[in-house]
Amino acid sequence: MDATGAFIDLEVRHEPLRVVGATSPLSRLALEPAVAVAGSCPLVEAIATMRRAGVSALLVDDPVGLITHRDLARGLVDGQGPTDRVEAVSTGPPITVPGATTVVAAAALMLNEHVRHLVVVLDPDDHRVVSMRDLLAVLLQTVDPNLWLTSLRVALDPPSEIWVG
Image (cartoon, rainbow, N blue to C red; front, side, top):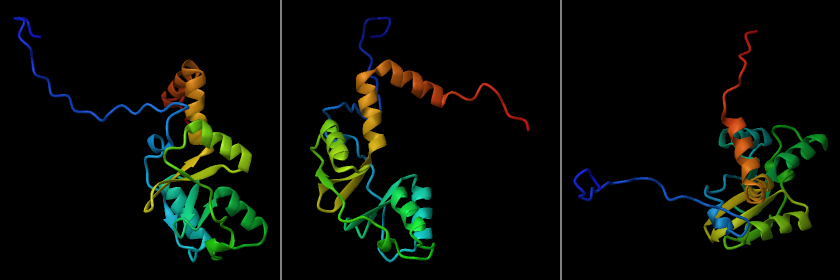
């Protein structure tokens, strides 16, 4: 209302609030399509793709396999080189879950299967990847919102000292 008591039309444009909790479906958490590479892709190219996309896992031949940082490290230790193919070290087939799977159920599955990533199938042509880190962030927020907000604020605050040298 304005000063005269008349209603004022306000046009508010914003994205819907995305609240994700322990019992939320993964479809509300996994918002970005999975990044994929071909099995014939050289390892060095897969590493560059992970770095550019800011992800720790790639689908291989969407979703025949999955390659993670751990797979890359294991491959290098086993003698694979930067020009060797992704399919030489990828894990397949990945564990897939429907988008309706809850955060808690996904975390339990990861623990039971000893994996750090799950492929979320929203429809036959739409795959997403969630990591243990994604789930841990939701569960931490659920258990102790104050701790989560404090640690988030610290992570976003600029450093109090500037390194000059």
